[in-house]
Length: 232
Ligand SMILES: C[S@@+](CC[C@H](N)C(=O)[O-])C[C@H]1O[C@@H](n2cnc3c(N)ncnc32)[C@H](O)[C@@H]1O
Image (cartoon, rainbow, N blue to C red):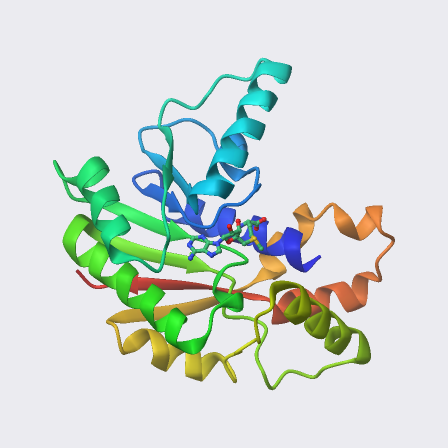
């Protein structure tokens, strides 16, 4: 439910910005968003580390050829290590040098694996990128949740331990929303947090997996996606 709701929640927040916004999805992995996103007068730049992006391109092309789906003309792949500003700068020069546009940077399942120092680097790269290339910048991500001080059950503790072992990374969660707000404001972002309740009607997992609707609603209220606006 967490995975499906964060995906849908990011979609809804992008749509709420109106059509006049270009999208840069970082760390997109095998996410299907770019395949599903309707064509329009914008660019959708899909990025990840080079090896992962190559795999994604292969899968993406397979799906197009198997389904006969048309490629969205505004969609582009571009390799990017989100922690390396030189990559952001090249991306900006390639796609946004002629005109400043409204740009949304989105990701899910990246920042929660980063150390605090890496999160700061990511934030500063996005702020610098918006300052150089955007008319208005929107950073949209559910990745600042879960918080370190949340109530943990044995199952969430077990999941955390397993993911830490598998990724060989120690989680460094924010303690809560206020800490995230302060972290973002230090680089010039103003943040809002949108609970996932607004996507509850679209979740397919609740009925497919026979989840308890009352518990599901309480969880959706807690899962918040952050939209951080950069004042260019
Ligand atoms: C857990 S997956 C999430 C993928 C996708 N966003 C999703 O929701 O299914 C994490 C992704 O982050 C990418 N990644 C890890 N470090 C990165 C970095 N420094 N810059 C860009 N992408 C990175 C990985 O290659 C991987 O595709």
